Length: 123
Image (cartoon, rainbow, N blue to C red; front, top):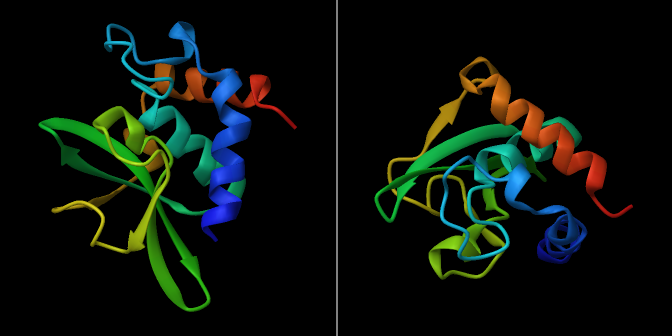
């Protein structure tokens, strides 16, 4: 599974830019400010849940995926916190106090950034 998500992230890397990042987010890594947009894109592509937690004092969005009867939390933007760029752990073990989010909680601006990222993503 890790290889699949490493490949997915590699396809995203060329698409990351200032106009796909959350406005005003400090540009410290390629994925900085992209967590919610990436989580929406992954959820749309794979039909998984969107979840969030506080990481290093900021709200951070990622995904929860059911696979072979188990649930996993998957973060494709972990590098913005000095972690490996792809994080995978059992559901609830990746970051403390993770909660499931609804698509209705995602702003129109984030949805637009997610669509832009997807349009620029390498095939």
